Length: 249
Image (cartoon, rainbow, N blue to C red; front, side, top):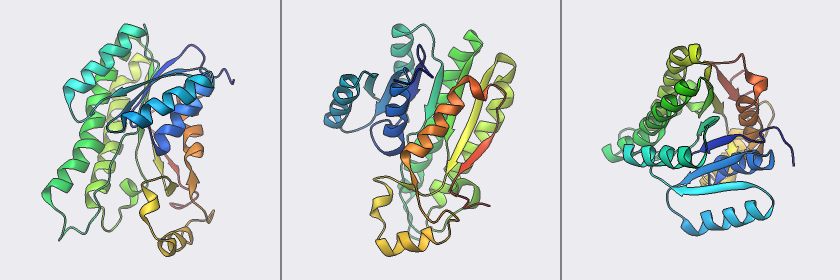
């Protein structure tokens, strides 16, 4: 087991699938104690807990809806009771409700903004309260290249992820004096269950626009997350890092 994060406690939202699951697995393999949120599948959370703990990792899955302030407060209270320090928070949970604006329902707008932006705000606020007192911490928000470049059919998702960029940069300035670093990753196309909905023809067309000619694996995003949670990133804050295979070059 890699000891990069031995003795550290992290919270990862949306940790039962895709990028979030990869982040949880990597951090646990590097010695961290991880509290991961999920919102629906109790069975999957239980299965992941068994698998990771049997492999020597320390993970606790917590059913939590990050769009509810009370759920977020309860999550942090639970982690604080179990651990004296929260070293880092990874705001990964997100949803999509794609559609052209002329057909987009108001609920589709609010659902995406509530999860992908308001939920990040609730998590950041709760994390800041803890980290300012302890004068140390890392907050890493998972944005999207779509939040920087836009994408037809995703005005809700693009707007929410663009909001995460502004939140990240502003919060970094607020918390820097307390040694709390806040950064954002902007992944491009990542192979996850969310992207499996695309047809092979759609995937091929999209890959042709990526200089590396392929999607990212969730583990590649997780590796960058691990770096930003480590002491190696101690002089980086307020940054938005594209992890997109050169797409935005």
